[in-house]
Length: 332
Ligand code: TRP
Image (cartoon, rainbow, N blue to C red; front, top):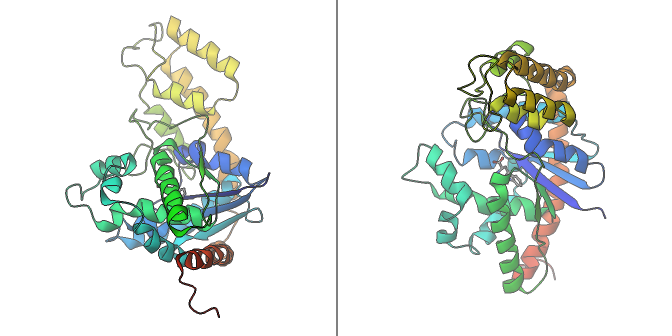
């Protein structure tokens, strides 16, 4: 059955391989059979970059360029900019009443983000409340499927709590609950072995990285510190090169063979790195090629059109929400 899919990314730089395996690849599959909305979350990005809006506005077109290059098809998916759909702000206002401050403070995603951010001990209301605005993003489109990385699960949970509360209090089944769709690969580690590949941690391979930069990043990946000579037995667990091979090498027979040869001893780091390099270069070559095909001005037009369509869908939900609350004043 056709469902509504919504997902998005904060535009704070170009997209990387972590985004690709975590949520972009699933979107490409989903757009063939469902109504997909893909949101560039500039408002959400502002919640932790409010003093550097340029970083966001300058990334919007680049993120969209990456989407198009990986195969998000604007005739199948509505790609739009969050701030161009003001209905989302209105919904956020109504939803803020439906969640406690304590609940927001307990959110594991927000907590771990706070540890990385500079306002660690004086969090802004905007940042603490971004999960509420994310609930608005999801429910405005009545999305039932949300392809995201596993770090976003607590946010989908809060969304569903808000949905249940709204429907209970305002007496109508206006809003629908959503289900997170996780990729089977899971979270991609950083090139330095840190738990998550991310732009801010400087440990990610970008879809737009050149051939040479990709090669350098792969060469600098952590392997097994005790695997000094090729003949030494090596560890596969916690080895970044194998983590990436797990995510990107399609031939699982070859992968198992590499793993057992590495564990036995006799397979050098340079060999596995060169296999990984050619795997990633093969993946990125057509993406890189498509990246140069569209003009900035065409991308901007596409985003404006997508935002208009998104706005119409969100406005429909907002009018139902207003009616449910009893704010239908101007309809006699
Ligand atoms: N929180 C997501 C991120 O950090 C971006 C996002 C905003 C999102 N709104 C969303 C994801 C709604 C899924 C659904 O990348």
